[in-house]
Length: 159
Image 1: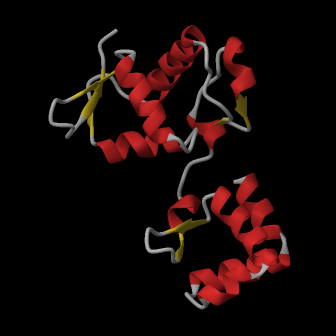
Image 2: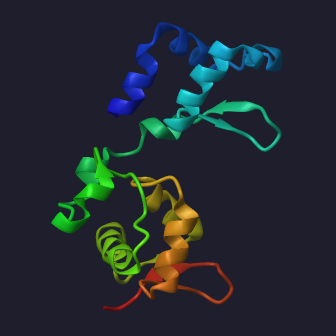
């Protein structure tokens, strides 16, 4: 939540965000270097998303997300360097460390006896990192999440 408040603390960025919310930002207005800079910050914090057609859309769900620090219990000491403010800053390259991280994430984000849609898995991973497809793929490859053959659902693997 601190990142959101920080992103909206700048008066010009706040005005730009309001124009996007009200759908009053003309495409030609995006050409300004100052606007591009502010847009970059709004997009990186999740306040705004660019649609496939290039238009911008405010994402109200960003305000409904729980605070990461409240969602995720204590991170194992060895993994703390990969987190900042409750968010995963990078995915470990070393397979053993990455596996330890994935065990921690699946253990805290997913219930053992529940089936999840791909969207639900992505939403859970998005609370800690934006690259949901990489986290999902690593968890499936490491045998921590089981994906149905038709891709319709996922479940946490039995320990």
